[in-house]
Length: 303
Image 1 (cartoon, one colour):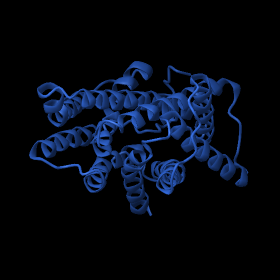
Image 2 (tube, rainbow, N blue to C red):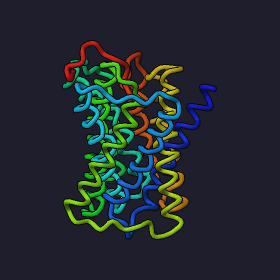
Image 3 (cartoon, one colour):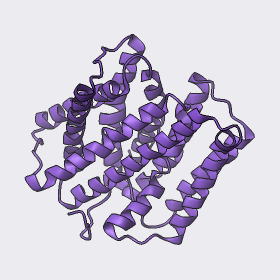
Image 4 (cartoon, one colour):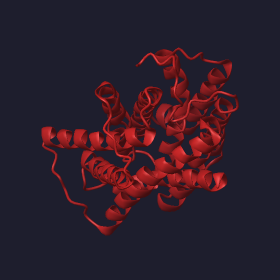
């Protein structure tokens, strides 16, 4: 059962990046992200209601659920969808996999967790890998589009890490992760709808069957089922071992990128990928790991 959950998480999170790339086009990015989380939020709320497990977060928790919505279910994906216009989806997944390094720094800032030598080594390996992957385009030929893509993906990953900190605080306060995610996705959709209205962005309907298929996959498989299988895995084997999934899904994403986006592997890209994945492996090699949904912490300074 544990192996099936782990494999499901790797495959689901490894394939969502190409689905994001399929949505880039005539539908504005804020609208695409709104469609995704409006659908995912409604599904999760309906499932919880059907199971009689739907509860409303307490007033004291609402600001942090909103913060989780901003960081995990709106701002970060605005950046990732924008980045998909400049970079192959597989490379975005490599940048995103360095969220664990962001988490180590943010856990120090917000919760007082020590930054270990292991985390510093992981950061160095990850930064070296990204430099090898993107350095020739950015520093040699100065490809502005590559620079934009890397910057947007890095900012999106930073938002994701902030969302992890909000999720950690919510778990410490006794709010079930599934409940926080259900309301967070709903709040995220409302935030995106407000952004669409305020900016006068046209609410364009899904243009074709490929877009609809990608939307359904991202909302149902990527958001609802993906988060559910991951949380089940965390409950069964712990956050440290479950988080190894993030080491593997860039390989899945890059494989799909080579098939659907004509991404070409080179010796340089293989070295860069190896260094980046080595950084992830190093940070997961110790007994304490911050996962996307962290266990309760009595020291939480965000409470």
